[in-house]
Image 1 (tube, protein in one colour):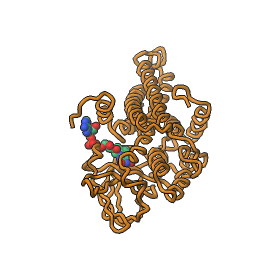
Image 2 (cartoon, helix red, strand yellow):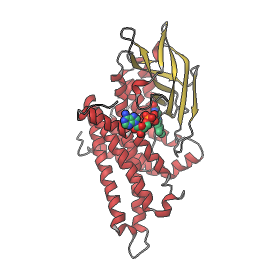
Image 3 (cartoon, protein in one colour):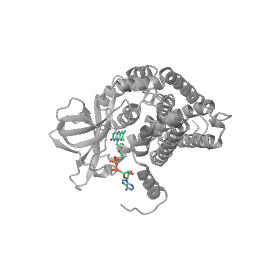
Image 4 (cartoon, helix red, strand yellow):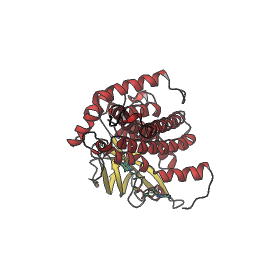
Amino acid sequence: MSTVIETEEHKALRAAVAALGKRYGREYLTTVIKEGRHPDELWAEAAKLGYLGVNLPEAYGGGGGGIAELSIVLEELGAAGCPLLMLVVSPAICGTVIARFGTEAQKREWLPKIAEGTRTMAFGITEPDAGSNSHRITTTARRDGTDWVLTGRKVFISGVDIADATLIVGRTQDAKTGRLKPCLFIVPRDADGFEWRPIDMELRGAEKQFELTLDDVRLSADALVGDDDAGLFQLFAGLNPERVMTAAFAIGIGRYALSRAVDYARERTVWKEPIGAHQAVAHPLAQAHIELELARLMMQRAAFLYDAGDDAAAGEAANMAKYAAGEACVKAVDQAVHTLGGNGLTSEFGLASLITVSRVARIAPVSREMILNFVSHQTLGLPKSY
Ligand SMILES: Cc1cc2nc3c(=O)[nH]c(=O)nc-3n(C[C@H](O)[C@H](O)[C@H](O)COP(=O)(O)OP(=O)(O)OC[C@H]3O[C@@H](n4cnc5c(N)ncnc54)[C@H](O)[C@@H]3O)c2cc1C
């Protein structure tokens, strides 16, 4: 695969997903959200067409592709106005981590069902007292015989209500050094001591965010994914795809908003020519398009590096792609709303609600500033202030 020119297979996938997205579209998602439902029909159809598990190994019911393909799926659904946020979490993070580090039994139990859309897995790392500083998480796993007992709190975890389990990032105490190390556990939704409550968000989305409490949640040994010694390496195997997929989410939404604005600017006439003829209207839209395209190029590069197994290079590229896509999305949505004048703020046109949605990609899963920190320290070798 080339990162500069898309392959015929990728173009075909893009066109097929775009056609699916078009059949559902923004109206479908708006109705689902209004009715307080989940986009189950679209999720099921995407699964049937092989899109949900396109990145998962063929041996476990997946399509045998990578994050490059999955990001195309999310971007195109977003561009049609109906992004599926749980694609970022279930197949991209959880599916990847299980496929790479899970036991044979975990792979057999989860991957085919994630691919066929009958099971979903949420992902929980963020904690109220750690936030961006995930080295500070305190959700602790202690051994009790062969079992693990998990205690802690998580916040902003997406889709816990619809997920059959949540992949929880905890830490074990290293007996030798006293240092805490991250490890990953599959926590079933109905586990004793596992509670969640929705957080009121000013976001119009089908997927809700939750605060979790893990109060001595007892898990059998087979709940641990991979090795309790592999630590950060395993974690980043899931977090790099998450960044690529957040970029896809952002680019999709940016494209959707931009296309609505362009359609409007072509038609709306208050002087002699449609407003799109005024360069003050046209240029910012052109700029938004260029920035979305540039962000996509970096996203494709990150996906290519990740799929090629170059985790270190993928980490840098995935961060930069997420940054670029988040910024491009915020700008595109802002300009789209502005292009519609008063209509930009009406429910009928439905663009204003994307303002908060577009901010998600600037904050999550890692904020703009934390990416700038990463590039300052890791790429440029500048000293650290914290
Ligand atoms: C819609 C949504 C869905 C989410 N879904 C999930 C999920 O499914 N699973 C999950 O685990 N998490 C999820 N999150 C959480 C998300 O990853 C966090 O919100 C994000 O990591 C930022 O953490 P925080 O909110 O605690 O902000 P903080 O860490 O409190 O940061 C606040 C501000 O301070 C800045 N800041 C912090 N430290 C520095 C520094 N050293 N230098 C410069 N600036 C700094 C940040 O950039 C930010 O602007 C979700 C969040 C949202 C909004």
